[in-house]
Amino acid sequence: MNNERWKYIAQIFRNKFGTDPELWARSPGRVDLMGSHTDYNLGYVLTVAINPDTWMAARPTCGGTVRLYAANLGAEDCFTLAPILRSVSKKWSNYVRGVASVLRESGFDLPLV
Image 1 (tube, rainbow, N blue to C red):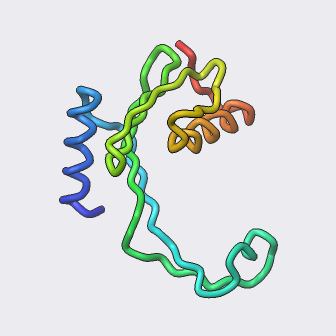
Image 2 (image 1 turned 60 degrees about the vertical axis):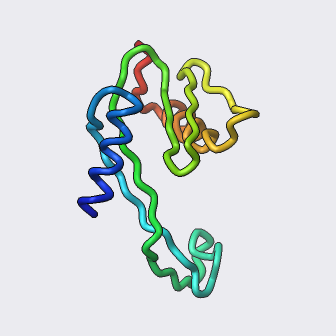
């Protein structure tokens, strides 16, 4: 983990949510040199990781509300887990909403209380 980036994101999290994150995830960017969109169709693909990446810091909460902050957009949003509805005004948050919805439908425990 890039220590400076980790410190920066942890500080943003503390400033926004008043506590430290408990969960960290990082995903590298990728470029498809050939075969875009064929890997999930069992075709050949040549993909390489690139330096731009996405980081996520999280912490469980009570009350069935998910609060989001996208540092690169300077944007905030929140939604409830019952029901999980699509946002028309903050479209950037719909990916997180969709993942939460699929997790719930698949039987994962996303506590409402």
